[in-house]
Image (cartoon, rainbow, N blue to C red; front, side, top):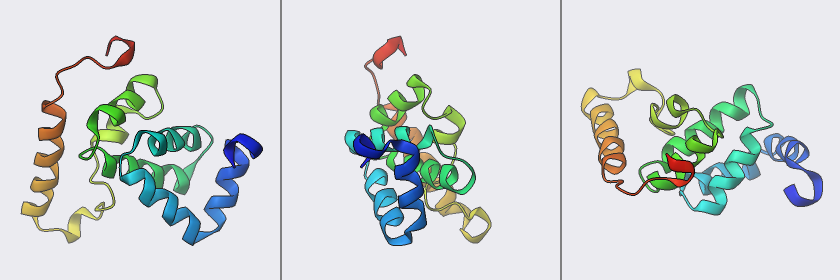
Amino acid sequence: MMDRDGAKKTLEVLFEDDRRWDCILTSIAKGQPAWLNVAANLKAVSDAGASERLAMATQEALPKNAPEVLRLVSRGAFDVDVACSGYGFDQIENERPIRVLLGLVDKRVAVVSRIRAPLKNGH
């Protein structure tokens, strides 16, 4: 769809259909490189709610594929604060016990800390 209609039109169509939009976000959250590239392309043309949901999907992908998420950051597709500081789809901090929040942070720190190879573009 993006190849045919462009990212902006694709985002408009997907965002208007809750079922399809949720499916896209769930796929991005799995951390597969192709879906993370979809996130980067859609993020480039998104705003407000769409940007926030794409950020959450990318945050959700971080523990599953930290090198690919950090490549998006190094390319400027996502800001490091956006990609790494949230809890993914578990954003409602005040409804989660502190031990759950700390577990989410610890998991993200652990996967990022294990990265030893430099990312593309020297980062």
